[in-house]
Amino acid sequence: MRTFTKTYDHPLLQQRSLAHQRWLADVNPDVRTPRVVEQRPGEIVYEHLDGRHAGPADLVVLADLLGHQHTTAYFRELADARLDASFTSGGTTTIDGFVAGRRERLRHLLTSGAVPEPALTLEAVEGWLQKATDMPAAFYKDANPRNFLITDATVAVIDFDSLTLAPFGYDLAKLVVSTTMTNGPVVLETVQQALDTYNDHPRTRGLPGCTRRAFAAWCEFHHALTAPYLGTNGYRFGWHTARPGWTTDILRHPDEELAP
Ligand SMILES: Nc1ncnc2c1ncn2[C@@H]1O[C@H](COP(=O)(O)OP(=O)(O)O)[C@@H](O)[C@H]1O
Ligand SMILES: [Mg+2]
Image: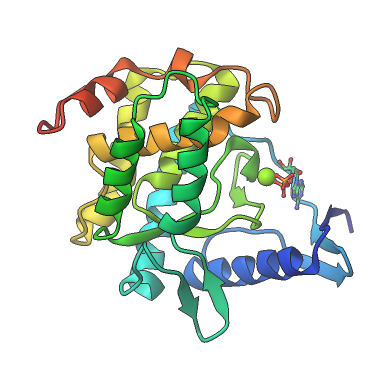
């Protein structure tokens, strides 16, 4: 059988990745992930999955998948989770909260000048982190285009190293920002359609979903957090040069849910 081996420098990171994958398989049993064939010290051996990385043409299909995953996870596990705390499932698997690590990282990036043309000030970032503490919990699993393997028949999700709680829409914003940084500006209607398609999942089950303003803010979080990787991982376009204008416009008008 063809396999794919991933190496780990630290046993704790390896164990966490396996625990994350188990948790995801539990909350999203209908979503394809690669079977773990073998674990060795410093290595996880997965079944090899065929498929290509995601591109702009996949955004709406993946938004549908993420909306489904997050809504299902909320109703199965995360309804009582708070984004400013970590969440422990079944007394074993711990998923880090949304706020703590990100606050320090964003503060550092924004104060050191590492983020080109940020559309959020440090105070605005703090405001969004505060708002997030009252939002329903979904998760972040680093939805960059290389963490999906797509064939004509299936979409598989891979790479379980990073998993944290996050507001609804946050991982979709990661997908949109990282796809844009890889391929250049995405058609405006596609982003809107992706957000609407995503939001259908939480909203048909009585959850608020992600507003356009919140989505724009989460895109700016990802801009700051991903800017240091520009020039690596296939990221050829800075979000500040390729982002849709409505995302910055809407953040300048705090009281309006402006239609882009
Ligand atoms: N099970 C797998 N089958 C086939 N290819 C894989 C598999 N797992 C990972 N890959 C390939 O390796 C790349 C990197 O793997 P990933 O787990 O995302 O590691 P990283 O931590 O480097 O992002 C993926 O984008 C994908 O192309
Ligand atoms: Mg990856």
